[in-house]
Image (cartoon, rainbow, N blue to C red; front, side, top):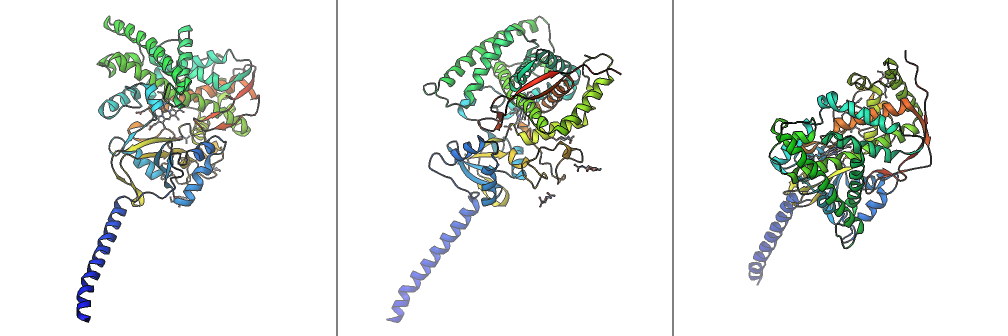
Length: 484
Ligand code: HEM
Ligand SMILES: *[C@@H]1O[C@H](CO)[C@@H](O)[C@H](O)[C@H]1NC(C)=O
Ligand SMILES: *[C@@H]1O[C@H](CO)[C@@H](O)[C@H](O)[C@H]1NC(C)=O
Ligand SMILES: *[C@@H]1O[C@H](CO)[C@@H](O)[C@H](O)[C@H]1NC(C)=O
C-alpha cells in the first residue's frame, strides 16, 4: 500500500517539481529578457495623457516627472498619446538612446507633423540619405559660414525689425518675424518683401496644424494647414525651378539652395520635391525654437535685474569700442561676450524648448539596470528632466546665469549632461546658429531699448513651450551711447 502510494506520489511530485522548476526558469529568463521599467500604464487608451497635458499646461510641469521618478526611478513606463512609452529622465539612458539612432532606435513623429512636413523632410529621413542631408545642413550653418556670411545678415535683419519698434510690442511675434526672415535669407537669399510676408502667413497656418488630429474631417485647422502647405510648396517650387535655370547658366548665389542644387556644395541629384520638403523642414526646425528662446531669454532677464544689468554692461562696452554708432557687429565682438554666453546657456537650460525627443525601439533593447524596452515601443528621452535635476545642477529650478562662469555649469562637470540640442546623428545642426542669433538679438535689444512687461504673462509647455500672451512689453528707445 505504502509502496504503491509512493510509486504514485513520487512521479507526481517529481513532475510537479519539474514543472515548477521549468515555470520558474521560464519566468526568470522571460523576466530577464523582457523586464519592463516599473511604472503605471494608467487608464485604458488614455493612459496618463491627461495628467501629462494638465501638468504641461501650467508654469510648473515638473511634478509629473518628479512624482514618477521618486516612485519608480529615473526610467519608468507610462502610456501617453495612445501608446505605451518608456520615459527616461536619466542622462546615461538618454545618451544611449540618442547615440544609437538608426541602430536600436529611430525617430518617430506624430502623424499630423509628418504629413505636414512632407515625405522627404530631414526630420523624417533615415539611413544614408539622412546622413548626407544632415551634414549638408551642418556645412551651411557652421561657425565659418556664420562668421563670413550669416552674421552680417543676422545683425542687419535684427536691426531692421527693431527700427520699427515703438510703445507696445508683442515680443514673441517680433522674434518670429526676425527668425523667419533670417531663415528665408539663409535658404534662398531673399530679403524681406511682400513675397516673404505672404509666404510667412501661409506658413503660420501650416504650423498651426502640427498639434491637431491629422484628419481633415475632424479638424478645420488641419484642413487649412494642408491647403497652406500646398501653397507654400508651390511658391518654393517656383523658386527652385528658377534657380535651377540660373544654375545651369552658371550663376551661383551663396545660400543653402545653391548648395542643394550643385555638387560643389555637396548637393546635386535631388528632385524639386525633395528640395522643397527639405527647405520646409528647415523653416520649421529653426522658427519656433529660436523665436521662443529669444522671448524667454528676455523674460528671464527682466525677472533677474542683476543679470540684465551685467549683460547690458557687456554690450555697452562693445558699442563703445565702435567709432560709428550703427556699426555692424563683428565676429570678434561675438567672441567677446562671455557673460552673454552664460545667459544663452542658462536660458537654454531652464527653457527646454525641445523638452525631449521621441524615438521608437527597432528591436528589443536592454538598457541600464537590465530593463528591456520591447520592440516597437515608444521611448521619450526627456532632456528637460535632466536639466531640472538637482543632482546635476545646484538649485536647478532657478535661473542663474552665473553658474556657467565656473567650469561647465554642472555640479558634476565630469558628466556632460547639458544637451539642449540633443545628441548623436540627429543633434541639431542649427545649434551654433541659434546661439549667434540669440546673442545678436540681445546685443541690439539691450543697447537700444529699455522695457517693462506690459502685462503678467506666464510660460506653458503644451503643446509647445511658449508664453501665454506672446510676451507683450513696452519699449523705450535709449539715447545713443556716447562713442569714446
Ligand atoms: C534654440 C533653438 C533650437 C533648439 C533648442 C533646437 C533643438 C533641437 C533638437 C533637440 C533637435 C533634435 C531632435 C531629435 O533628436 O529628434 C533638433 C534637430 C534639428 N534642428 Fe534644431 N534647435 C534649435 C534651432 C535650430 C535652427 C536655428 C535650425 C536651422 C538650421 C535647426 C535645425 C534643426 C534640424 C534640421 C534638425 C533635425 C536634424 C535631424 O533630424 O537630423 N534648429 N533641434
Ligand atoms: C555627482 O554625481 C553623483 C553620482 O552621479 C551624485 O551622487 C552626486 O550627488 C553628484 N554631486 C553633486 C554635487 O551633485
Ligand atoms: C566662481 O569662481 C570664483 C573664484 O574662482 C568664485 O569667487 C565664484 O563664487 C564662483 N562662482 C560660482 C557661481 O560658483
Ligand atoms: C555652454 O554650453 C556648452 C555645451 O553645450 C559648453 O560647451 C559651453 O562651454 C557653455 N558655455 C559657457 C559659457 O559655459
